[in-house]
Length: 337
Image 1 (tube, rainbow, N blue to C red):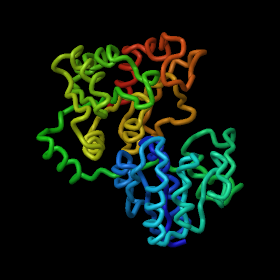
Image 2: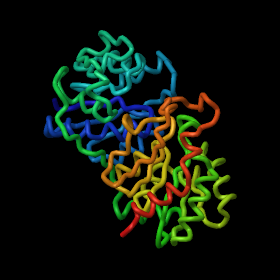
Image 3: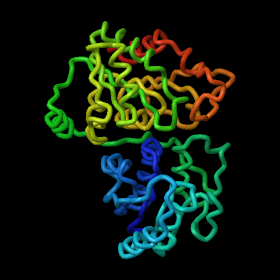
């Protein structure tokens, strides 16, 4: 195999967790050109992976079928002459373009009854492959073959030049001690530690000499504004003001990252930053931060993980009862010299 395509996930965190698959494909196929088909909001992460040669834009939003546009994209991909494609999402529509492009080997899990669309089909055994990163890595092996372990942690790139250019573009200097907070979670509020708790933690860390940066998308701006208002003068609210590439470079400079289970948590883990990760409705047994520098805090209540976007019981105890004092203790241990 000389040339292969990845149909990337539509979530930043899932895309990060696919990187060990890419590394394994290169190990199995020396000299491989590995491209990725990805939506614009995921592409910056792929461009920071040494494994990916080129990122091809996927113009489809969540849930869009757009058969005519998929046919046009398939014709473009057919002209590129890929030997194989690895379809990481399990949806039927994600397998349409590779099928229409006539790519000979179309590799993935059966997913939504994708018989014919996927012609090298893996059967997902959730018991033997509990982690998302393991499920992606499975696709590098022939169906039915165990995944070689250990699986390497995901890695993305931020060079010294990248970081200098980002600081210059934003007109900023790196604080002497820099803590990054990622208070959002695209999936839903059941994964978000309360803004008031983040603000208390900001005040506590400021007492230890930290300057706080708040990171996230424009959708996270309201919760970041609330944190800033509750911890006046202590936080730089960068939500929605940086590109994802710039956020990657700024996170790479952080002495400490405190985050919900989110895409930026996985970015920070792939940058090998010290992390304190806060889990509520989701499970660290499925999508943990894959780093030796990560501490995971979860209360393990009887009602969690529920995997819901909003708390079905209306109290969000899994995060409300995770106190700032508990998180501060983990932060100080993780950031100790």
